[in-house]
Length: 479
Image (tube, rainbow, N blue to C red; front, side, top):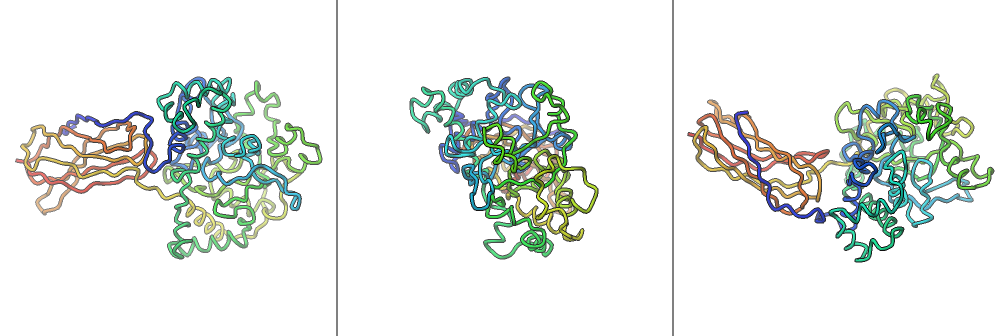
């Protein structure tokens, strides 16, 4: 490469530093959420199945195209369902049965087993569930997890949030791990309510005619709003929409954990209620029912053609497919439901939507994706006003990350003025560094430019999974 780079990063703070836009408990939760050491063997963080760039759900394209259940910390062990979004779950109430409607509401996980009855917060209970699940993070005990946190680089942050003796009671410390992660998941970084739809609600403008038609159908003919209501686009209830079995689910092959093999049926909420000791008159009507998920970020992708899985078992591979299923379940030859006895026969299955109307609903659903904001401010680089070609000079500048962890790419782009007086992109130098601080951070590069003429340079910043921001230009005369 023509341009040679020597990057030096200064002013790195300890990992316990937290970003200015997160409270201490939210920053602690973020450290926990992204800590790959909190599994046995180490290597699997919460973020492995809940990635921001795809709406805080599964980020692996091949997994989504197949069984949709993600591999855990132990090679060859998989969960039994598609990971739901870890965003926009903070308003889910404690699991309860409404005596008037006879409908279950609240809890977390597809089957509601994180009831909230223990900690008073279903989201916090859900957050600590995967740590001890042998199909997920596979830790033997709560004490193992707590000890790893106590030995971590952010242990002092944990103490500052939960007290100097925060690790003295293992059970209390473990519960507080869950509460901290829940705080992060409720934060504006994970659940910002800043989609195009939110902007439309505030301004009354900003959606296309197709998207507006989709919104009208969502609230009317398509019946979506019957369950996907409120600002979280879920009423936190449970339903059985007749989703077929996913024949590629890897759990069917895990006989050590699933002796039924391919005949296993996910019984959802009813299955949990049965194991919890409820009477058959209570659990049988809930068999095969799964929690109504939020539709926020339902169309969020890490690339134009990135595949996402839909349904509790990931049977559907696109928004178009699942919308078509809801519309035509009872009028086309779809596979049989995974659990047939409790299928909702009234609200979906024969909606009478035209292909154009299906397309409009999909277009509207894509307006529910969180807007991606630059996660750092990158400042104009400082370059010598005059340089000699093929000589090395130092160009430096500053970047101020907006949060305390993540991979930041700082790249210097160089443009050479041509004979027509137009600056044309020529080349770049770049580096990837892991910044632990939200303080101003210096970057510098040793650069050699090969041609005489008028040059300009600007810095570009990108954060993994987020958008790009640019600095202003500095100008150089090369002789």
